Image (cartoon, rainbow, N blue to C red):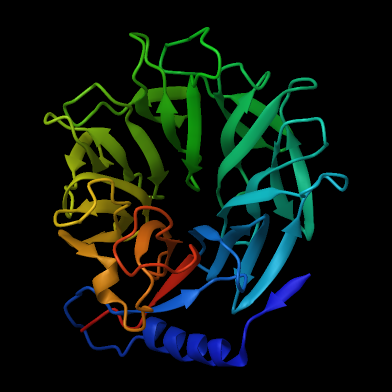
Amino acid sequence: MGLRRSTVLRALLCLVLAAAFTTSGVAQAQVVPKYVYVDLGPVGLTSTALDVNNAMQAVVTSGTAFRWENGTLLNLGTLCSGCNPRRSYGTAVNDTGEVAGYTHVQTTEPPHAFVYRGGAMIDLGTGFGSGSSSAAWGINSGGQVVGERTRSQSSPKRAALWQNGTIRDLGTLGGTTTQRYATESIAYAINDSGQVVGTALPSKGYPLHGFVWQNGVMRDLGTLGGDGEATEARDIADTGQIVGSSQNTGGEIHAFTWTAGTMTDLGTLGGDYSSAYGVNEHGRIVGGSRIADSPDPNNAGHAVLWTDGLMVDLNEHVTNLPEDVALEVAWSINDDGAIVGTTCSLYCEPGKTATPRGFLLVPQSATA
């Protein structure tokens, strides 16, 4: 059942979208736009938003998975009618509106990956028997889904690809482990060319390394120079540009972009940590970073945008951000520059006391 937002929000979105995505025909220099903040709901509840597609549909989770569009939340439900509470988690949405994620399927079974397609939630399964689990983290426009699966709750996770009713194990970078609850590989995203990115165990052992997989071949992306912590590849554009996080030579975890074999450190907002989670076809990247002057060394950080060589704190570019809200992390950006993410939940700055919510940032204009 859909949950409707106010008519005021609808009017705001119409005005903002018209301003953001209508071109004047006059060539102007690209600068960082201003954004309008939209709370994705549901009203009064904690939520998170992990993905937005080019149709301005966002995937939101608040107890169950929702698909948000034009101020309306469509509750996707779960696959377990007897579970209490009934839970599902939405992670990705493609340009046709199909949503991927994971959900409980029975009261006594771990979660399974799902895809919401044709008005119904479909169990993608695990390929194993009872006690096995799976989760979906990415979906492309062709309906290919990637994620992870395990034979049992304590066995190692392995990256998986779901396509046309089959499940393919994507393997590792040569490493295996017998450790309980360990990770051998996870797939986070897939582009429309079928290239998959994630993190996997190399033959030398831990830590995990970022990878790109295509046509049965998994390639190690390397690191930013440090190799004491895991490297993760979190998203890949159709251009082949990859983003994620890796340890640098100074021992800090920094966001990176990888293109044609070269990994570049994207830096931070002055703190000791950053990570990139989304990239669009124009090379604009979103993620999160700790700031230099935070009063709390454990601060959760600020949502950031990397564009045209600039690193921008998104909190400083929103025209209507409530005073008690801090944008903690940006998870995804579509090709028109709309961004989704989550507001601060723990270790927030003084005064940032709002309930953690999924948000949408709509660019007012692509130019100054």
